[in-house]
Image (cartoon, rainbow over all chains, first blue to last red; front, side, top):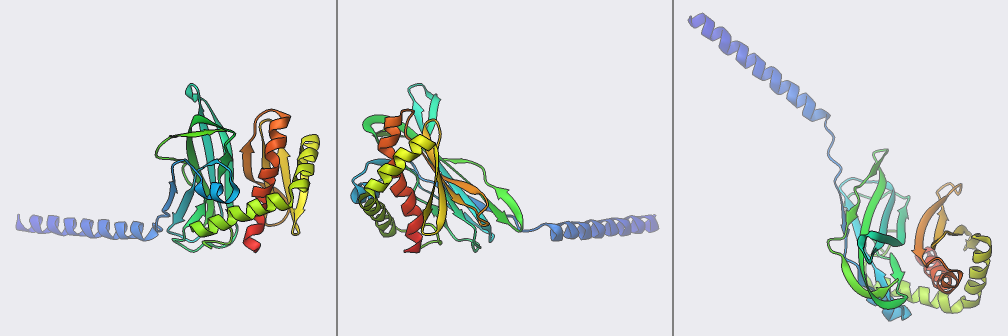
Length: 159
Length: 109
């Protein structure tokens, strides 16, 4: 009986060792995750454009940062306005892409702060923005999800 | 500058819009002629400090396109909605030209 107990203990120990070594092999094969973060700021009337150009315009800013070095980055920001029936008749009013072919080191923030749509009148209009990016990381093209502004904003800016 | 293309602080942003405004004033007549030509031809190519760029009208707005690394194809860079009408486009295009040209020329200053 004692002999059988001893055999079972040894076989369990061997199984555990095998399991651990297999797991280590699996963990060693996993590359560090690419984590990219895009932040889209709420639509606003650009004070900078008004100050320098005397132009009223709705603007959406975004920035992105990745924990891995990359190249061929395209950071896109789009501005949408809602129609009279909300999202049903929404349409895009502006798009701007920041295109950087050169190497971008890990954790460097990239900004897109030029996307704007000039106001045609002072009609109260609801806007939101979307941002997304593509880049080449470790030789592979990766795409981020589309990120939407936290809030829609009603601005006195008809476009 | 945060990168070679974009800026990351408000004073640089101010300088950028100031530069765009300056371009708009200095090149007003060229932009008006360019707008007329674009309305007529729908697509025009312009060279800015040796860089070929393209403006393409669509139903409601205009795309500003820049060449890729190999200068073989054009990337869609900026688009603004002006409306369906010809007059709305004619009115808005000069400011669009100034804004897009500023984006391209600002980093070389």
